[in-house]
Image (cartoon, rainbow, N blue to C red; front, side, top):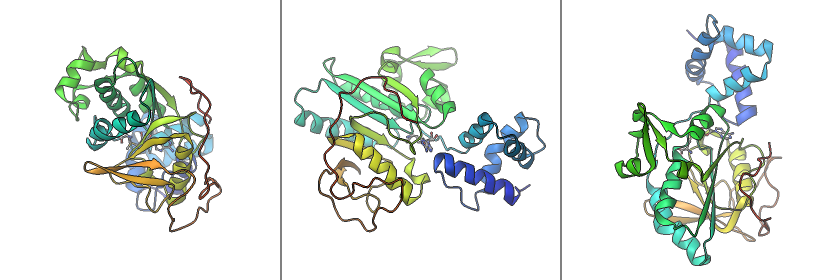
Length: 308
Ligand SMILES: C[S@@+](CC[C@H](N)C(=O)[O-])C[C@H]1O[C@@H](n2cnc3c(N)ncnc32)[C@H](O)[C@@H]1O
């Protein structure tokens, strides 16, 4: 069974416009396998019939469901380990060295999927920081479906088995039937919000931004525009953490690469930049490239709204 060209083009265009995820020709199998459960659920004979009904009906919940089904939500606890060891050994010591009184630490976990990343950050911070540091983690994703699980903080044994060290399980979870429930003290440090990376970012400033394993789905202009927006909400001296296969190099020159353990993290450069191989060209890209001034921030608050 294969999709008609019309079905694929409609889905690829919808997903690109709403999420920037690129579905190149050749990804028909992916579209079909992701949409088949929705087609069956709606009683359609197949994906073509389902997409035709979405197209003609133009109902917002159906359009959202198609986009959400095409996001890839793969994640795990302490994924790739390096960012979390770098948090202990490099980033927090560097932040402390610059701010001897670290009374407040704000983190943005962007594209957080089902929550394993922000909870892994929260567990790491709970180990290191004492009660004198107030920790606030803003965790965001495009998909309501994954955010609902993240907010609930409930995970199956299979999910827990993917990277969660036993001492962390014992310390931060309790049994709930066949599942595991995250401790309320940890959950309270995280605010989950729906947010599209194509929109204005949550209100900064943040000391740390985790933006991992999502830029890979976007084209160069979109990556550059997103990195520009992250730059604006990251405190000078703060850190950006990307996925193992992602980098700012060749995308946005306003970042300094900092080698850590077996990987890299990035610090924003303010008021002077490295050369870029190509200039910013998109309408959505920020226009303050080379002479971007150091930002001034209003006092941050918890539970800020997200511009959409
Ligand atoms: C592969 S997961 C990465 C999860 C986590 N950051 C990690 O590294 O384990 C990618 C996430 O990006 C989200 N995503 C995709 N496009 C997005 C967009 N335009 N805005 C916000 N989130 C997006 C997806 O919903 C998905 O949950």
